[in-house]
Image (cartoon, rainbow, N blue to C red; front, side, top):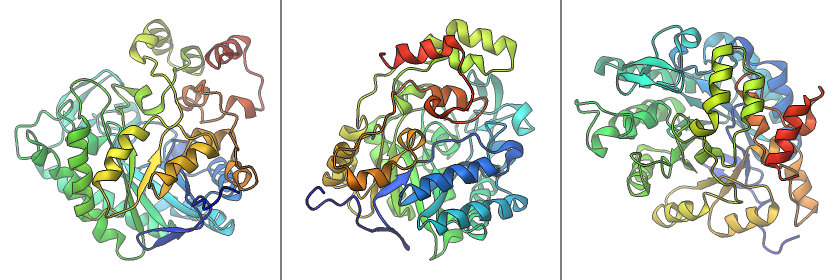
Length: 409
């Protein structure tokens, strides 16, 4: 056992104490047909909880129907509470805590999914969907913030210990924060102070709903990851504001799903696998033709956000910081914890090996078997998030070759 290791010591986020320093990150599972929890979702989070994680995070739940970006995504509403309660009860039986990420995708939806013209910080066109987008009116902002609060209340009813508010990755709050997507001329646009107003409004409602018995984490960007987006200096100001707004922990991330998706996840997007599972023929062939230019590769390295995260650690002392990004080995996890981060999040590592946390208890140099082909992400858009090493079905030969090439085999 590594001397003085923090990894398997308890630590707290607001009113919540976790049994160790590991959290399953809010990586979208795509396991919710009909926008409701399924047996598959329960089984996956049960496997992670049984695998020793301190807290698992269900991802991500739209606070309104207009916030849905996928057919197989959770939409918070009273009728799904009993199904969510089964998930939380099962996780608790394994001794782990459970959180749910709450958000709104903003302009990254389509009428066929969300039932209306997608809304965002500003009117425009989103190539990601592709679709026209309507900017939210000023009188719609407080009700939208209240939808986040109502989702917090539903999460409490469903037995969740914590909520993670998504304020990064180019989703709705992030769209207000970033000058790339916020072109408003009212008091919610222009200066950074103005661009933070919607975030402040959401946090005001969320903290009132969370009360004294639920932990509140916020996922926030350290950079948007492209020219014209937010850089680290502005993102630091956002993080400091979130502390003032009441956040009890910050999850430090980066990137814009609609502009710089691989800045978030790193590596290459396996275009052949992604298009293989698409139903829409014109989208399938369009992505196959131009996907490698639309989704450029960003090289993977262990702990790829650590350099930026250390600047946030230096500037923010009041609350716990959660490091996420490229953690696949105990050695690196120990380094991150020793650098002063209270918790670490993992996504693909726990998809590859749900019992990875338990294995780290007995193996000081444990390393998961993720090959970083990102097949799990390519598949996620159409079916579910699954590691190619654990599939029951046989992969087509072309997909196997693509994975082997991307994994350097």
